[in-house]
Every structure is written in structure tokens, then in C-alpha cells.
Image (cartoon, rainbow, N blue to C red; front, side, top):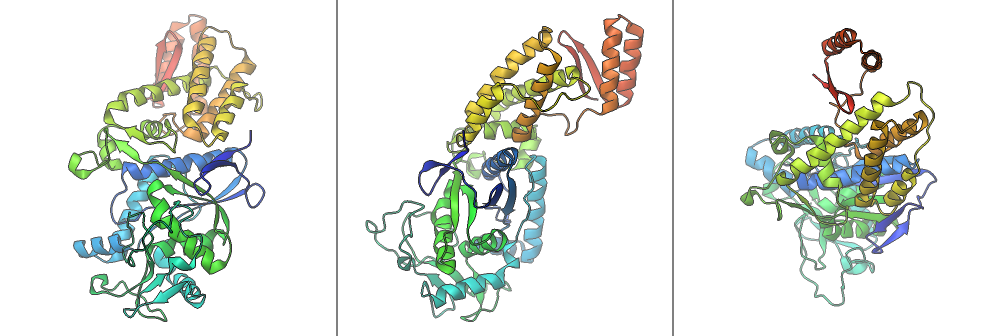
Length: 462
């Protein structure tokens, strides 16, 4: 089965066909670095990580761009409140964001363009839109996009422009009213902007948020690229406005596939500081969440459905992570020393079919866990041959390259430790208990604990 993705623009699943063979241009809306990102933000970032990992598994070379919004209403307001320079504020929260990405095992993007690095190119795009009569100037130096000049405006969000009354211009970077409004491409300078001002042919000021993403994505991926992602809250107005200004400035189609993840519900409702369910990554660390447990909660539901993240589900997700890790150790202990190739069990084809069906993670995880339960029993009952164990090991590696759920303190078991485990297993088979204890002590001195269980040796970091 070919990879099929749900395109928000068409509201249906479509076969994925990249613009260039075996290459994918992927743009994901990054954070606005005025504060810490919260778990709701990371629901989207981890979905995008899953998409990227699956594309790589299918053999695509992915050029992934994630922007950093370091210039908008929120960043300027926060810097003023703290009495610090804008760059100092945004550098600080960009650093925190990168640390959170790493801890959550999210693969890094190939490039993280920052809005403040692209002001000149934003001015160029705005000038082009003015020259083509898609935009107009105001007396205060602001420039607005005239949405009535773009006949396809509203197609992404499925807005009925004829059925809605046009409202006045909007100068805010973010607004959630599903109503058509001319939006700011350039904001004339106001005293609240302080020193955050740039000169443009029509007057001094700064760019609007929407034009920032258009310029950064086109500059890094080209005027037409494959996939643009974000949360459902980005559909309107942000992505709708991106399409309008991008296609009007270039005269070309902007993005071929639009993918959006649904909202995350936290502790039974919407996340809110007043409700005490507003969780940053540092909060979750303090609650003893592991990165793997968080990843499981965020990926166990389909990306296009609302899912519930809860501390009450932590026990369940921790249990699943331990079960996966135990299976990893069981296979690691029993796999042949020399690889028997890249063979995969037949179940992999079912798993792949589910993932190719618009990243159907609930189905894919169910297939994998059923297979894991059966395979684990076969190995423990000595009913699996070397080739089957090797094939199972390969499947587990594929699975973890997609989901990254296995918790082994972020490191493989060293080869010398694995070799000592093999020798110890043989010693126990020969009932040489003294030698077995000696090897266990040697392994402990290397920083690892060995536990003898009815299912065999279990290894974990000391």
C-alpha cells in the first residue's frame, strides 16, 4: 500500500507523491519563543517527528525546516515586561526549547530559521504584493493584504466568503474568529515596539507574523514544496494567510499537502493555568514522567483525533514502556552474535500498511503489541529458531526507529557487557554458580545490574 496522507486542503486522504523522487521538503511551524513550550505544543511537534521518521523509514531524504518565531506581538510584549532586549529573551527560550526537543527524543530539523534573520526578504515579498495590487498601504506605515484580491482565499479553512460579512482590518498577529479580514503584512511602528523597528520603502515598522513563515519556508524549501504541518489552530488564520500571500507573490502553488494535528486535552479538559493542568516539560520531569512515557501518551492516539494526556495514565504508559524494554532485553540476550540479514516477520507488512494509512498509530501499535506478546512467549518457551529471533530483532529496531519508546538510559548495551552475559548464561547452564556470580560482579563493576528471573537474565543500569 502506498503512503496516504490526509490533506487538510482537500479534506481527504491522498496518495503521497513528492515533487522530486525520493526527496521531501517538510516545513513545520515552530515555537514562538516568548515562554516555555507546553505539552500541548509538543503534541504537534511529536506528531511531526513521527511523520518525519516514517518518511525516512520509507526511504525518503527529508529536508526538514522548523522556524523560530522570535519577532511578534508576544515576544515584544514579554521582553518589555521583563525589561530585557528582545534577542536576550528569545535566545533564552530558544535554548530551553532545544533542550526540551532533545530530552523528548525529537529528531532535530535540518534548519531552524529565525524571523529576525529574514526581514529584508519579507520587505521584498511585501513590495511584490504591493506592486501586484494584492496589498495596500495605510497612513501609519502599515501594509495590509487585500483578501478580496485572492479568489481562493478561504479554501484551506473552508470559509464561505459569500456567506460572511467582511469585517474590518486586523492588526493582531493571532486571532481566532473564522471571519475574513484584511491582515497586516507590515505593522507601522508604535511606541510599544520600542527599538524593534526596521526601515521599509513605505515606512518604518516590523513584519506581521503570517508573512514571516511564508518567506522562511520559500527561502529554505522553494516556492512550491511538499508538506506543511502544524496544529489545527494554525489552519485559520495563519496557514490560510500564508497561502494567500505566498501564491500571490510567486504566482505558483505553495504547498501540496497540509497536515494538522488535533488539540490535546489535559486531565479531562482544555489546558489552562487557572485549572492547574498547564504542563511544561520541566513540570512533567518533576512528576517523574520519562520521555518515553510522554511519547507513548502522545502517539497512542491518531494525530487527527483529540487525545487525553493525564497524570492518571502515567502508570499505564510506564507499564507499556517497561514491557517494551523487557522485550528488547529478551531479544538482545537471545539474538545471534552475527546478523542474519535484514529479514522481517510477516507482521511487519500489516504494521507498514497501518502506518501508510495516514499514520494510523493506534492500529500499528495494536499490531505490534499483539505480535510482541506472541513472540515473547515463543522465545521464553524455546520455540523460536535463530532466524526468527533475528527477524524479530530487526522488526523491533524498525519499530523503535519510528516511535522511540524503548528506555535504556539512551544507550545500547555495550558489546563487552553483552559478551559477558553470554558467558554467564553458559555458566548457569553448566550450573557453575561461582563463575556465574563472578561474572555478575564484573558486570556490576561496569555499571550494570543483572537480575535472574524465570524469563532469564534481565539487565539494567546500576
